[in-house]
Length: 138
Ligand code: T46
Image (cartoon, rainbow, N blue to C red; front, side, top):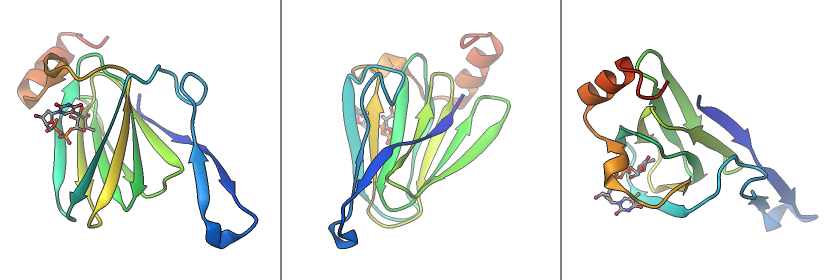
């Protein structure tokens, strides 16, 4: 199921130097990272996503701004507000998800367990419900 992860961070002796956040594959997250991508330059109100993945595991991090993520497992919808660069949202297979930009130019960084493969996407909601009812993700 989706879960929010808190990453380690280091605050320097001088607060004005900012914070450094770090995470390590197979230590702080449960999968090997094969791909990293990010989405930027979207204005508040933009909605992306609207799909589920068959096998892909991902960690979503809003490194700047505020992004609201809706996760739907075909029975329950959960909402997460990503507004902290030191938090990540794990989104596993079989979760229909949408990301809504709540602040201009928010940046969504995604760590993914596999290379890009369009055949791993379920982009039709009826097909997603059908697969879920058939037990595809059980
Ligand atoms: C996801 C959410 C969180 C590629 O060619 N390679 C890539 O690695 C990715 C991620 C996308 N693409 C292509 C596929 C589409 O033709 O870029 C285009 C835009 O992708 P999409 O409309 O799927 O973008 P989002 O923001 O709706 O979804 C993305 C990821 O695709 C998706 O896996 O879970 O971010």
